[in-house]
Amino acid sequence: MLRSRNGFSLYTVISIIAFLSLIFILVLPQIFDVKKEEKLKLRYEQMTKIKEAVIQYMTDRNQPFTGDLFELVRTNYLNHAYESPFNGNGDKYIAEGNLETMEVTIKDPNEMEVPIPEKYKI
Image 1 (cartoon, rainbow, N blue to C red):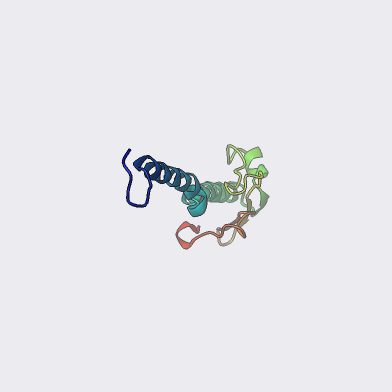
Image 2: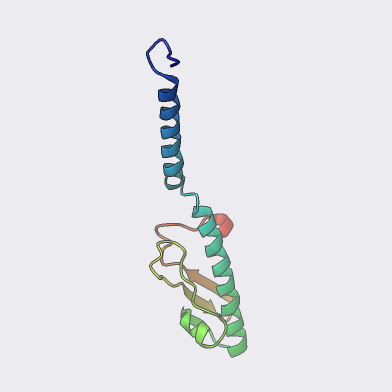
């Protein structure tokens, strides 16, 4: 069997490299949170749909909007009440719309744990 001067066989070296590679591959996603960018993009898309629905609601009804998304679902402005993609606890967004300025504010209940980056602000 092939051995280096230190007494390690080629099989031992390959086994150690394979083991370390496996550990690195398994731990890498948790260290760098690979899916965080996907979740941020999904949150941005959901908030954009909610904003459009709130503006349509205020325009059609000529009244401001305040509250959770169930009113938008009930009145068919949204298909369903979107949940925050972070923490998976069924946390729904909270929206508020000012009729005079047509300004819409949407709050994610998990925004404190995962702040919204500038490129994903509405």
